[in-house]
Length: 480
Image (cartoon, rainbow, N blue to C red; front, side):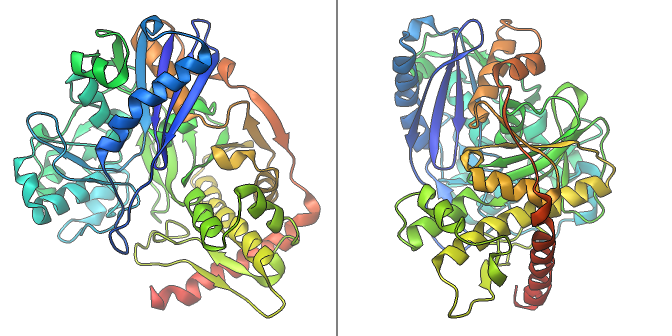
């Protein structure tokens, strides 16, 4: 049996795969990030460690299996977080997670970062966070390594410091063409190559479960542990994005959107980034805006009982939300442009509008950002024939319909919508030599279970609402 772990923003999830590559158990342990001030977002890495054993125990219990039957372990999880560790492997500071945009990018050549790395110079990415910690966190002077969440947990359970090419390609110090760290950019950010994990393939064996790792996980010492990958990539892979032709839309806490391409393409408008992926492909993607997290905010702010209540309210209002528009920038804008100082907004309210209109506008506004990315990807020559929706939001029939209608493509939903841990487990199987073809295994394990066809009668209303959203963004730009 194989165990895959997803280190999420709001929970850590474990999945158990049987020897014939079927999901036989899964379990999640919740936790939450904290927000010390506007633009800041943190998590204590010890939350992940404390959740690891209980999540695995729960998944094994549901599978009716014992820990000593597990033969491999893999991790997927949050991108762009930064964990500084001391020589004992312990964190020196809370993790600055993906939505934290406090870091400065002054003195760095944005054009050079874009040209060499294929990414946008932005405070969300790892190198900027490392530099911020070095400047502002005295304890970090004792740091010997800087990790992302996945490589951090891999190091905690194996003692090895490894990161995969895809995740490294988000750091702003990884040369996309050279497939290695870029010395010039390392120098610009004040980072030593020895302060970062070694770069391996996501399906490579990072190491074996150490005694400390066995204590943290409850699994047998010595089993292989895969390098794993960040959740932009593990969620897409677990949803079946293994060859070009599909536009992926992962509706998690953040909303990841993009498509595979056989060659690297660089977006001159810098809405999408280009990342290394599996089997020589490149993932042309926007790393995501607060999406499921925005639904959590709305549910809690308006004191709704559940997400089902939110979508039921939204379903009472026709496409276009009768003139109400939501700008999806609760933690800064990532579409139609990356602007860290942008803020969310509802526009178009009158006394005739109520909570259902706000709920509908929320769902639509988040989907408008997806359309921004879809149109840019196509403008770059990346062709797609269908939309593949995954993540917790994929369980909403209404949200699937909104997205299919917005871009005029059928929306495919896989059998299992929480996909990051699935990919982590499959990568572990590959690292352990228990399977040959990652793509085929994922496709067999998680086939398409539902297809939502676009409704032509909704297109005009959505086109008008989308134009209004773009006009609103431009009108508010001077305030950002």
